[in-house]
Length: 132
Image (tube, rainbow, N blue to C red; front, side, top):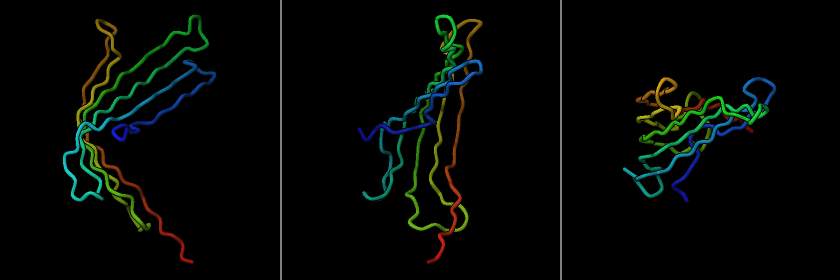
């Protein structure tokens, strides 16, 4: 089971606006480990990611879906271990680079799709810990 992990945000939102409900689920699956420096270090991996987002008229007659987007991706991911102590500036968290597709899964005049090549740098700002 350690091959599955979260990918994009997972949420369910319900409110008075149209569409009444919006939800998204997402996961990634490690296809292969490409490189690992030491057994204790985090590896460079080949990942398959899948995200699905739906807009749902949950209050309407027959509760129709307005739209659903299917977003598969294949990418290489390199993560860094979290720093032990906070430093000033940015802490490196990792990199993702790959190919993604987004589609509503339909054909003809109502079809919508596009392909993308992407690179994402993951970092966070670190704040110093107060001294005791």
